[in-house]
Image (cartoon, rainbow, N blue to C red; front, side, top):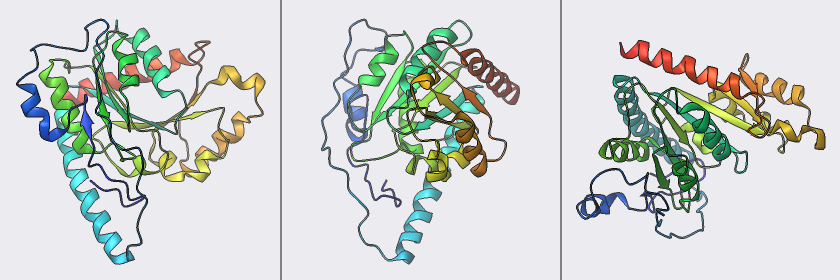
Length: 286
C-alpha cells in the first residue's frame, strides 16, 4: 500500500522474515507450536533495498483520490482488527515516535514489570532487521516482527497479518495487552488506523521541545504523550513545561507522563494507565 504523504511503498513487507505471498507455503514447512520462546533463536529477516522512494509529482486531484482510496481501505481493515481485539478483551496500543526515542527500551521494561498482571504480546515495526523483536522475545513475551522494506509506517493490513501469526502461535490471549511499536516516523503513522485503542506518542528529552508543533498531526492523533529519558534532564537544555505546553497547543488536555526507564520514575503511572485501559477493554468485551 503506497503512502500518499511521502510516496513510500510496501512491496518488500515481511512478517517474521516471510513475505505475505510466501507465508502459506512457508508455514507448511515450519514446526508447529510457538517459536518465540526458544532460547537463542534468531529470526533472519529478508534483506530488502534500503532506499526509500519519495513522492513523485502527482496532480492534486489524483493524489486526493489515491489518499481517499488508500485510507478507506485501511480504515475498513482497521475496523476488522478492532472488532477482533474487542471480542477478546485485548487492550491494544500503537506506540509512535521518531527513531531513537526509547520505544523498544520502554516496551522491554514495561513487559518485565507487567507480565505478572496479564499476558502481553508485541508487534514490532521496522524497515529492516529483527533486532527489536529479538529484544522483546528475550523477555519471554511473544513478538512478531514486521519489516516494511521501503515503507515508513505500519498499516492495518500488516497488523492483520501479524495478528494472524500471533493466533497461529496461540500467543494472543483473551483479556491481554497488545503493544504495537510503529516504524520510527512522526509523520505518516498519524494517518493510519491499525485498529488500536489509542496511539501513544513518545517524545524524548534529547529531541526539541517544539516537536509537537513541527509534527502536529501525530500529537493530535495521540491520546497520551510519554516524555521519555527524563533522567538525562540534568545534562540537557530541555524545557519540560514548554514541551508539554506545545503538545497541548495541538491536543488540548493531552495527558502526559514524564518517564525514565533507567530511574523508574513515571513507570508506576504508566502501568496504572495500562491497567485502567485493560479493565476498560474487558468491560467492553463483557
